[in-house]
Length: 190
Length: 322
Image (cartoon, rainbow over the protein chains, first blue to last red):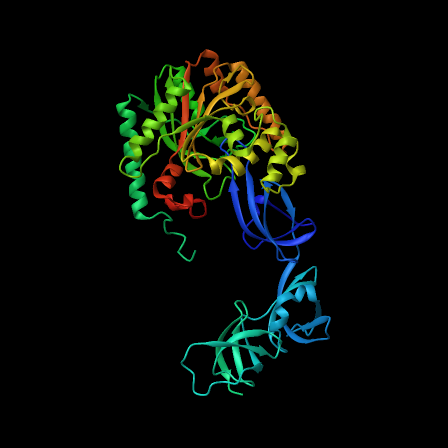
């Protein structure tokens, strides 16, 4: 089984801690001049998203996690599973609710998402940074008011709710940043 | 970093500051009658230490070792009657790379025949006041025993006698997660873990820590007592270890025993044993004058002077650009 020594630790390295795949976020080497060297490591559990710190004795080895990020096209959901397809091999993968998590409110059919696979199984789904989604519910738009400030909630076709400017109407398509959940621009008028 | 790797990581201003600090160090030493010396960096023997690994250099003949500090050849000069001496040089320690570590670094090391540790701490403070004058205000140094620091900042009732289980419970309370099996039963490794997590960050801005546990004596004398303690100090600036001083061990038999013990600890940790320096041991046999010595990390002093977060900011070319 592949493993990494602490001197190979670097940001982004994938390792297994207590049975779960984790990604190294930060690695700090500390050592009293005449004493034991340690690596203080900040890790993210790739299944739960938990970020925490753990200290390793320098020289200690940690099992490598076979984790791979793959771009896949979102196909559909049957309510319990979200189905994705590799755009070149047409290979299909189904992700459960735990893996899809917050991403599900941004998933639109045919959009390219990043799936994190651990031993071939999806453990997390990252939607594209920007998505274009149709507004299905919001208060009527104020015509001509494209410059004034102010915002109102709008429900999108995927169920996500975002704050939009007052001139947005039902049927409009808007561009949203999925990392912040913020409205960016109107993409087309409904 | 998108900057090309051929370029220095220190700014022109920091390079100038380094030159100025070096000049001030030399002026201080000259005023105090301490002789500048140069000794070989590539040695036939090493200072066997459980936690410091030297670089081995091969040229097809017998291997040589890059000094991890100039301590042993400088002690040979002392044994030959050099009187007070200092050296400003590079030292190398394999695998030590981090925010405050570069495998190649600059040491200022000096020895004072006839000095005890208190007198040498005074001189370290005087040197730092001299070097930092007009560059950054140096607070007065607080002196505290290792045990006091562990009691105050890690809440230990009996720091010198606390066992692994007590230290583990301190770490648990501090929220420090570690694989206990990997660290094993080595008491000093657990002490170091408590030290770096709980004590170091809480030390006064300028501090001398002295009276280390006897098992952390390295090349210092042990003062008998209850508990016996190492006649050793560390200087800290801004929670960063800056200098290490010893009232120097002079007994060749005790020195051999310690080298053997360090090699035993290396073997237990799966590390290759290191050859001891026989010329140094011969010098000890012939007699080292009673003296204290200290090694100070010049790169770290520059970090403190400039408020740098990483050692790279004070080095022309750190390890990856060397």
